[in-house]
Amino acid sequence: KRSNVSGVVTLLVDSQSLSVFCHMGNFGCGDGGWTPVMKIDGRKTTFHYNKHYWTNYEGYNIPGGETGFDGQESKLPTYWNTSFSKICLGMKIDQQLRFIVIHKQADSLYSLIADGQYRATPLGRDKWKELIGSQGSLQENCNKEGFNVVCLRKFSKARIGIVSNGGNECDSCDSRIGFGTRGSPDNSNTCGNVAGVSPDNGYKNIKAMGYILVQ
Image 1: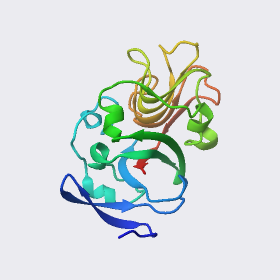
Image 2: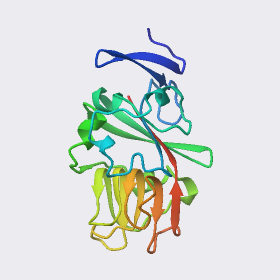
Image 3: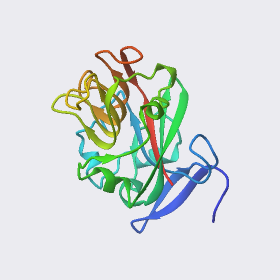
């Protein structure tokens, strides 16, 4: 039955029961029920850009799907088998939660990411910076955003996010905001904001707790 109250609900996924925390109401992404997909700790390498979790049908700490916006990392079966028309992206920094929404129709998040193909989004750099708040910082140019966002070799990459550069080209990006990230200037930051080489709001290395939900 449908509920208007946030709480743990049971979904039937791949013919199996899955308990998840369904977020109801407008907590920052608009009304309706939001289904959790992933929770990413930017200080850890579990969901680093190169990790196989982005390209497989393997869950991680599935009970973490029941605990809301906490510090537990999780990847749920909803990653590969839940269709949606909107994605809610959240970051928690110093206990402050901020959210943005991507309007995107897809069979699953897996279908947007696993093949490694770049897929653009139209949010704009200022919208991505809202995830970080007043500390958000990016270089001025390139501003390539969406899914599987990649600059050359050792430079910034994001499974979901934006990368920016000092020059107009997108080869040597030294700044990013995103989820499932890697590359210069700090390869260890897997979720949050990294900015070097003349960014617009100073050098940053902010590791966030990231949340991905769909509706």
